[in-house]
Every structure is written in structure tokens, then in C-alpha cells.
Length: 321
Image (cartoon, rainbow, N blue to C red; front, side, top):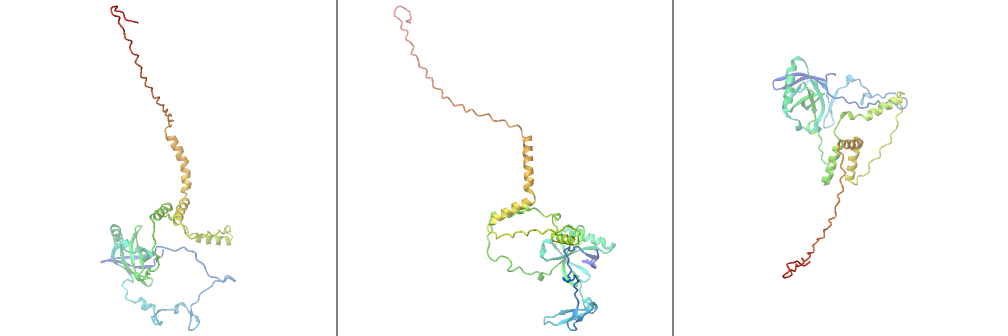
């Protein structure tokens, strides 16, 4: 990587000589403009509107357009000599929690490297202090002819500078939100929660630039280095949502299906049943309860056979049969 800036981080009386490197690079598709008739490249020339002729780059200077439309010419030397304290200094002005700033203010990130061996100790000191406190440093810096606020934070043991927009550069969101009062039901919120759970988290490996891949495949095909690109049928445009709950339920099912949860569940189901069969003890077939009919025993009210009176004949002493 090539360094894009050299200067120093200044906090208190400590100065750390550093270099900045762009931390990101966009990999979008780049096209060239050509003449459709013969494929000739289209070039843009710097034409002076007064003389109506091309001007070499060395003869071009900058100008500032005043409020009345008048152009005030400024030379490179005049701009370089401006009294700008943050020109070669990343000046630490405070330490705050990361949540102090809304991400909408963040512009571009840069890796910060210690410029020499003598800068290693104060570099590590600042890095460890930031990690220990859980805070970020607020700084001012001038990069690419622009002074801007920025944050210093730690990423993978490296100090990172995040340039930011000035507060007045962030447009107000007035008039963007829906004007009418909308009532959201609890069931609808719960269904969105289910959708979030079904969709899952973010895995960078699952995301690719499909447009760039398609352009590269088309180019390879036209150069005879790849198969013809098949045109896909355009997806149907979703209609107007009438039943929000039904749409949310369908979204949850689609999210589960895209993650293969339905197939996984289908595979697991027979395996679970087999495992359960194996593990579970043989079920005893419950004996049918013979609900014995209570034969209401007839009360055998034994008829008391009246004891035959042993009529004793007077005088005989014998019992009558």
C-alpha cells in the first residue's frame, strides 16, 4: 500500500510521527465510454471557453466562486501557505464514547502506521489507553485540501482514523418520515421478530457482488472464454400489501426455507423418531381394564326359618319330631 499522508498525532505534549494508508477500496465495475460506430475511445479535453482551445494541465489553476458569481483565482502556493494548524497534525481534542456520534457522519477510514521506531512506544501507549478506556479520540485533520473532524479508534491492534462530516453537512430528515399516524400492533411486531430470528445474522462469506460477477461472465462469454450468459426471467414485482400479517408470515416461511430449515427439520424428524424408538423401553400394552360389573350381590336376606318350637309334651320328656 502507498502512504497518502505523512504527519503526526498530537495529544498533550506527546507527538507520534505517523503515515496514513487507505483502509478500503471499492471494487465496482468500471466502464469506458466508446464510439458505438467504431469502438474508438471517447476522451475529454480541457477547453478554455474564452479562447475555445485545449489548455495543458500545467496552465490550469483553481478559482473560488464568490456569492456574486465572480471567480477569484487562487494559486497552489497561496493555498499551501494558509495558516492551517491541522495541515500536518492529527490534533486530539477530546475522548468520548463511540456512541456519541451517529454513523451517518462517518466518511472514510484510514490505517495509521508509526512512521519510525521512535514512534512505536507512544503509538502503543495511545492504542492501549483507548482499548482500556473503551473510548475513541476526537481529532481534527486536514486531508486532500479539506479539514474535517475525525475519530481515532483501535481495529486489529492498529489505530484507525475515521474522517467525518461536519454536523452542518448532514441534511435534516424533515419531511421524510410518514406524516400520518400509524398504529403498529403487538402481533405485527412479534411477527417481525420471528422474521429476524428466521433470517439469522450476517456472514460476509454469504454475500458477493452479483452484478460484477454477471458483467465479468458476460465479458468472458463475448471474448469466447466462457459459456453464453443465460438471461434470467425477471422476478415478479410484489403486489400491493393488503394483509400485512399474511405477508409477514410468508416472509418468515421464505426466510426459513432459504436457510434450509425445512429440509433440515425433515431430515431430523425420521432420525429423531428412530432414536426415540431405540431409546424408549418397550411400551407395555396396558391391560384392558375389565371394568367388572359390580354384580350387586343380592342381599340374601336369609329367611329365618322359624325354629320349630319343641313342644315338650308334658310329662313325657321327649321332644316332638
